[in-house]
Image (cartoon, rainbow, N blue to C red; front, side, top):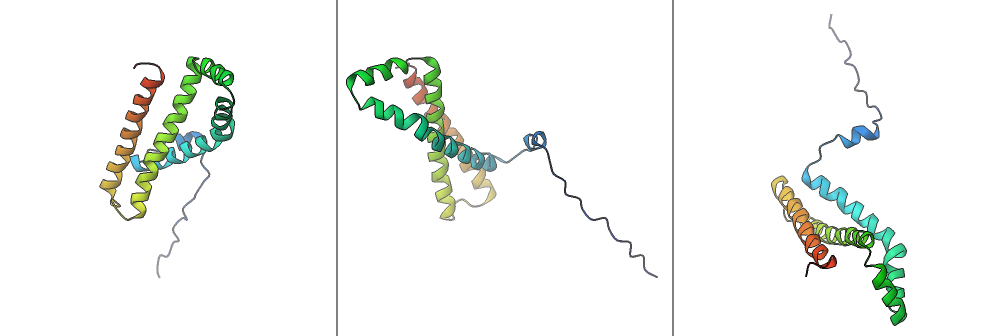
Length: 137
């Protein structure tokens, strides 16, 4: 007689939000998630921040001056710096994904390196633009 005891079936349970935060993603996964976050941030900021500011800046010299005084506020500069980071990260990660679509650097080690390059380049450019924005030079 055979012992054909059935193996217990694996149980897949719903996970909570705090469990998702404890996952350790590789750098390429973090790059992908931040690419989506930066894209969503840019889409939300386009009609709410970028287009109205541009429309006011080209209306008249007085409205441009009012925007210039408003943008002197450090809180507005921080918001603008976040938008700059979102654009730069989305741009750099987009170039990375285009190269992946061309089947360049598809192996695991190269993908990790290019993800690191995306984070490095976008953060360095954000620091440079941030220094310019806050008047370092």
